[in-house]
Image (cartoon, rainbow, N blue to C red; front, side, top):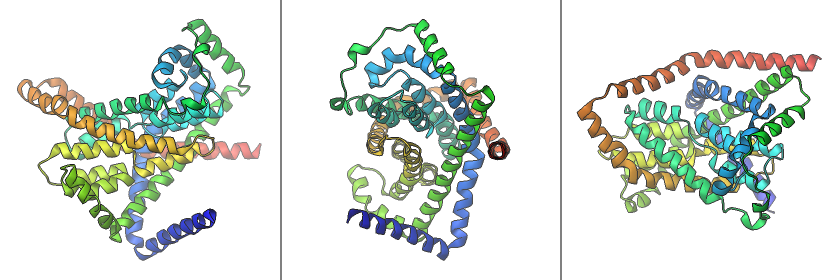
Length: 400
């Protein structure tokens, strides 16, 4: 009976979306193009190098080397093996869903258990500094000083989530204290060498597999970005978003937040960039409230990113529920930290810089703006080139 209800619900939602697209094809097409532009201008060229490098580092055993060295740190703090440090670091540097991809790979290679993988996925996905500082702070709010505040709240909250999730599933695991070993560079080198020898693939095939796997994952991510861009637009056109947003008015009044932020908040729960853009366009004299909502949706990741993570971990036995629960923890922690850190990291800092007017602030702003501008200009070229390379690799493998 449950399966029948589930089938009817899924069929109903899909049919509704198809019907809605047919009723407003021009608006749906515009939203689709917007999602496509975000993907091929920014997402693909930004994530591709990290995906390829991650694949190569795991193939050559570097991740195992890091794992042995960082075991004494990751195990006591986050209750995951040392190899989890690689997923955590790459996830913060390159942005979501890199952490999920690496965590899924580590699980497939049996380097971490199911419970450990679920813990790792819950805190190894974070927004990249380029997105927070370049896109949100600089591009939408035109104030890069806000990027420092959002970045600190986002990453500190993410670390707190990892510490909280270390207690997840402990009752189902055996005690691992006896198996802990001291840090040994020699043992780490041996582990790296052993991992490389166990992979019989020649270097050319390793490179080809890294490119193909990365491109396949990024194409899937692009599909989700376009789908949620269209879906969010349809909800707004059909008047469903304002109705749902009105339900948040009571909650916002209780929290003493402007009710004007309810609709942008709802949009941000679906897609981060769209929600942040709508928040930046609201004319209110309460910047703190805007930053609280932005921090919340950055921590929640948006249903678009969550769908990407769900698709990546679907081929493993990693369950989605712990990750979804962790998103609420991350969002709440980030929002609370914004209240605490708003004055010391933004108000006081802004007043100090107005008095001293350091040249370094202009240099920092120029760096992030130029980096974002460069990515947007060369991004489409990189996307087209690597899509062509992936097609050629697939063609050669099928012909031989």
